[in-house]
Length: 116
Length: 113
Image (cartoon, rainbow over all chains, first blue to last red; front, side, top):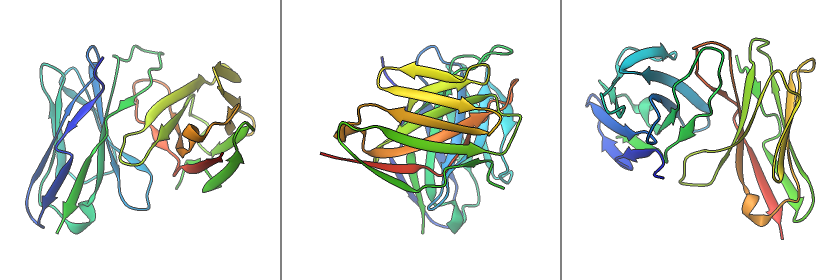
């Protein structure tokens, strides 16, 4: 069974540009999550999508946005890139969360975004 | 405000011995806890989880213990193997549909042959 796949592996941009990162979840998983791991920091929650809707958002500015497609894949868009956006961006997926249930999140290998 | 803390940045253990990785949390609303292992250039791999209604969960060589009163959990690896050398992250989430994971900064485990 294929795991969570992310593309591209590496992405180099300059300040002010826009970046688009892509994620395909594990087959059967409907929830997709995005995390940022900047140098020296732990994984920080960015966004959660389920059934095409944004369900929760971390403490990031609005220039971080995304969407989830009908096939449950997802895009993360970062506008007006700043130097501090340089980080590893990890996508995770899980089975649909039912009220009161817990499902582990399974991660892809990430996209390394470098801002010059 | 760091709600999940892994205070020891590194741990070195002899092959065959027990590895004990510790994690503390401050948010009493957390009710689901997970451990992930991460190799360089790879994403975190889910290892084991525990719900707050339990105090122990075991899966092969991995056991997680939860002490709710102390807001402390630990991961025991027995016996430790060189392939266990990696960064280990503790994570936690609150109940309901919140679903975001809050991570610690990780512990680097080195298992010496």
